[in-house]
Image 1 (cartoon, rainbow, N blue to C red):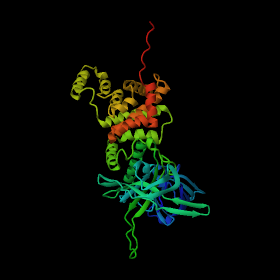
Image 2 (cartoon, rainbow, N blue to C red):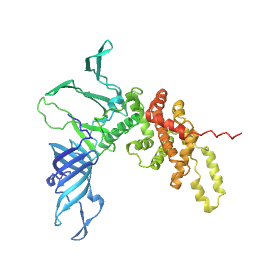
Image 3 (cartoon, one colour):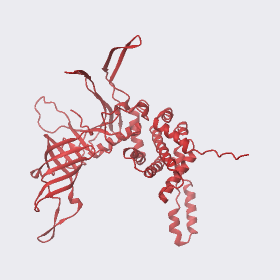
Image 4 (cartoon, rainbow, N blue to C red):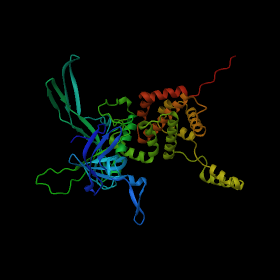
Amino acid sequence: MSKPLLNESRVWRGHWWPPGEQDVAMPGTLTYRPDKGLTLELIGGWDTKVWEEVRPGVFETSDSEDSRRWPVLHGLAENREITLLDCLPTHTASRNFGPPDEQTIHVLTVLSGIHVDTADQALFTECHVAVEDLTMWSQSSVISGSLRTKEGRRNGTGYIVTEPVEDPSTIVNGVVTSLVHEHTLPHVENTRGGSVGRMRETRFVRFQPSEPWSLQIAQEHAKMVQDLLSLALNRPCGLLWTRLRMPPEERDYPEGYPIRDREIDLYAQQIVPAEPSAKAVRNRHALFTCEHLPFEEVWPRWCEVREQCLRAADMILGLRYAPARFIEGRLLTATGAAEVLHRALGKVSPPIPADEFSAMRRTLLEHTPDKYRTWVRQKLRNEVTLKDRLRDLAKLPDSEAMGHLVPDVECWATVTTQARNDLTHEGHTRRQSIDEVIVAVKVTSAVVVMNLLEALGVPSERQREIIRDHPELCHTAQQAHDYLASKPSPREPV
C-alpha cells in the first residue's frame, strides 16, 4: 500500500458527524494542504451556540469559546473511516436564523482508517515514521551498482543489484525500535519512447511497544526521530509520512482470508515542509551518520540525552525549524539554550558552597533594615552566571575541536554575555557591532550542538573533522577567529 506523503495535498469527499450522531451527518470535503493544514468544508453544518435556560422558559445563547469546538468528529470517505481531532469552526453562514447553510472547520489532526472517540485511547501496536534523508543517514542500502571498464575506460556495461541488509534494532523502555528498509524489485518499464529500469528503496523507523500507544505517544516518538535527523544532518528534516498499526477488526472472516493489521495514516500540518524528490544531503554536510554511531547505539543515547536536555534541544533545533526573523531573537534563543543545557548537564557546583552561602545570607539579612530585607532576600542568589556557563560548555567536547571553534573562550563568553544582558535590560546591544552579535549567535549555537554531540557519544576524531571539514561550522570557526578573538595591542612608536 502506498505511503501518505505529507508533502502532497489530499482531498476526501464524504459525510461527517459528531461521534454517536451519524443521523445528523453532513456532506462535505476535507482538504489537506502541506502549507495550510486540514480544513473541513461542510454543505450545511451544526449550530456552534450553546443555549442556556437563564430562567424558566427563557433561553439565551452562550458566547463561550469552549462551545465552538469539537474535540472529535467522525467521517466516511472513499469507503474509509476517518477521525478528525481538535476541530474549530472558523466560518458559519446561515439565512433567516435557520440552521447553517455552510460551515468551515479547521482541523488539527486526521486519522485515516479508524474511528476513535477520544484522542487518548491506547490503540496502536506499531508506529512507522519516515523522515527526509533517513536512507542516507543510515549509511546502508540494499541497492548497489557499478560501471564496468576495459583498459581504464568505461565500456558501456554495468549492473544494479539488490542485496539484503540486516535491519538494526534496539530495545528502549520496552519498545523495540528498528531502522527498517523497504525496496521494490527491479522493474523495466517499456514505453513507446524507450525503456526505463526502476528500483526504489526507502528507510523508516519502526516502533513496536510492549503495550499499545495513544496518538500522543506516537507523535512524540515521531518528533524524536525528526529531531535526531535534524541534529545529525544540521538542517531541518521534514516528516515524509507517519503510519500507525492496530489489530484487525474483530469480525468473522471467510476461511483462508488474509488477515492483516489495520493501517492508519496520520495527517497534520508540518512546520518543516518535506521534499522527498530533492537530492539527498551530502555526507560531508552531515555532523554524524550511522557510520560514526551505529543506530542500535545512537537511539538509546538519544532517548537519554533528549530526556535530560529536552528544553535545550528544543530551543536550539527551533532555530532550524522556525528561525527567528531578527538577530535579537536568535541571540536570546541561543544563549537561553546554552544556559538551559548547562543546567541540565549539572556539570558545575554553585559559586559558593551551599552551607557557606546559607550562613552568609543569614548574616546579611540580620544586618539589613526591615524595609530592605525582602529586596535583599530576592537578590541574593547562589547561581552560576551565563558567562561561567559558556566558559564551561566550551570545555566539555573535544578540546582540539573546540580550540578551533572558539579560539578565544574569554572573548566569546564576554561578548555574548554583554550582548544578551544589554539586549535584555536596554533593548539593544550597545557595546557590540551587528557583525559581532551575528557571529556570537552562530558560535553559541555551534557550542550547544557540539555539547549535544558529545553527550550522544560522537567520537572525538569525528568532532575534529566536523569543525575542520563541515562547510557551515568551518565558516563559523573562521568568523570566530575574525570577530571573537582578542587582537594584540599595537606597539607604541619608539
